[in-house]
Image (cartoon, rainbow, N blue to C red; front, side):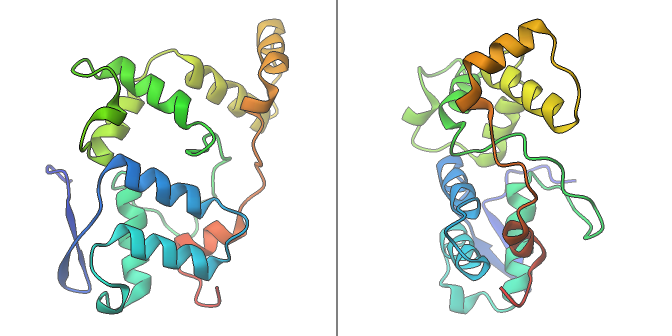
Length: 186
């Protein structure tokens, strides 16, 4: 259990400063989902944008990638045997809806984008408590479609009116899995 908001991670026995602001992480997530980038390029973007240290100083890059993914996934541990869930959120495509939902929870500012810094885990906490809003409904529709559940009349109407916002490429992203699991061939 982690009680502090990490601003550094131990990688290969050395504490490494990280870029923990939500904007940094969303930018990294956008690159990891970019189909134009190879797994090697995705790893490079992840490592050079996540860690403040030069990539040559990180040592075992596979451990550095795993620690970065652990942080991005809010401290969740994954086993290689876990099946990748259907993609229900695209941080780049859904960015405005996500920020709108977070803004509903943050009462101290008009827009979180105006804050000089907001830790990724704090941002995720606000997002997790978003309640019913546009992005929640979009995710709900995506989930029903991914699981093959029928849409009721209201869902169908919403889907038809918002198809371009709802549709995502839900095929398993083998390149992203290579980044997540440290494929040495990528």
